[in-house]
Length: 314
Image (cartoon, rainbow, N blue to C red; front, side, top):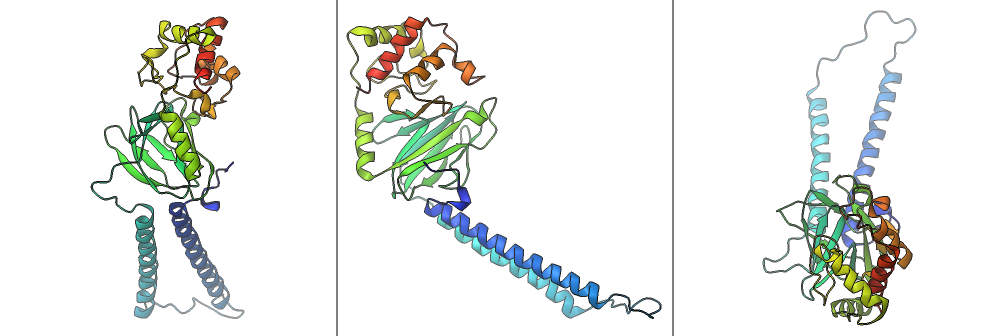
């Protein structure tokens, strides 16, 4: 599991470039501070009032050389930082070709993430799967308010603005799980709008994408079949999608292959049958302000819906 290392653990070429720029800026700042401290200490000691001296010390009312020096040095420092910043910007955000279509579409909702793979038609939530070492173009959108996509180890923050898609390159150098979150205050559950980037080997990613693209079999008997019926009767289908069923709404996260995800509620709970049941019974208990209503389901109804959701992964 990767930690929120950011600058101290860059895991992509983009983040390495940003880390280098930060280190250069810090190094230049430390050198400047050192020079200032030494200069001030020298002036205090060199020009202190000595025993026996009377009156004011010699007053220097101007030096053209000194004026030029302390003007050119800051200009040179700013120019160096400007060039370093421009170089970093080109490394982090090289412009895509005009005909390049996005590999991934990331859409921010209050308070969860919708992930779309346009080529395969796969739609999932709160987890971005990608092949390690491969740079993908992501289009970022918002459905409601301004959000901010940020996975510290993989790159910079970037806003998701309603009606104004942004683009970014995303790559993870090595397989692993990289944790991120919304970095723009977006309402009551902003702090619980988390995201996981799961970098896999090329083979693992291809296998995952192939499985996710399949239409899950709809159970025809048993408690899982009863759960599918209840899912429609209590209007869950008005907000959620389950591929291969009449449920095709995108108000809430897609529940197709929900059981294959690591968490539910955008990272609020670990994904287990017990936790899915707890969430269904009272979403607001675990995510106050959640737009998912409490349907006042009975234990029998909850267990049946959980069985239906879990059956997709069998």
